[in-house]
Length: 111
Length: 113
Image 1 (cartoon, one colour):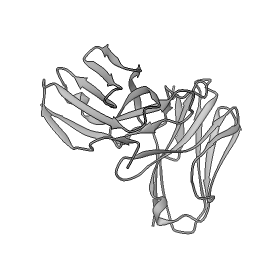
Image 2 (cartoon, rainbow over the protein chains, first blue to last red):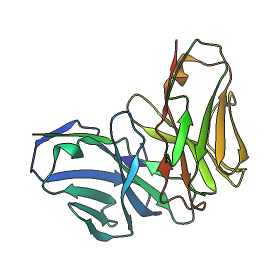
Image 3 (cartoon, rainbow over the protein chains, first blue to last red):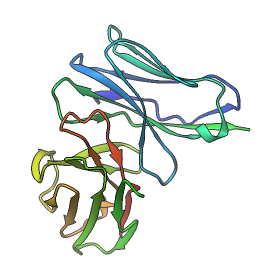
Image 4 (spheres, each protein chain N blue to C red):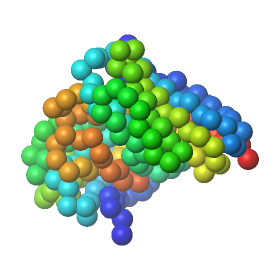
């Protein structure tokens, strides 16, 4: 079993829809949680970063962490075709030096 | 200005050859990484250097050898290439060794035939 599980999709939704992307993890030592966005043929770029449980909002994006359930989510409101990309969750243990990535979910927003 | 750059962008080569990929960052970061992304988009760390010192060395065949001539550069040399080495290799950098925020290069798509 992988430390971080993420449904690879693909996920296809109409423009304007609310998108929910999720990851589960098995190790309770993870303390920092990130979402990276990767456009086709490009490197991943950091989208959101949260520490421990709770919500964090940045424009149309909301990252949510539920440590009791070992579950993290990324919500995209008013989705746009330009949001079409692969979204990778990543997490790291306190004091560790290694990011552990989920497999990534491929998202397509249809105009 | 490109923050993290890699060369070459594409690399097609035959089994058994030796090849190198170069990475440079102009962000003033002191930690650099090599990742391998397979065909299923799974991104896995291979190596990490902090100020030219190796700090992460995952279970990677010793045909792969990283080299950091200075903290702005991290190169990856691969000997005796195998079909299974075909993947996209990403270089990344971060400030400090607690790598919450990493900046990735555009990737090098390696195809071994």
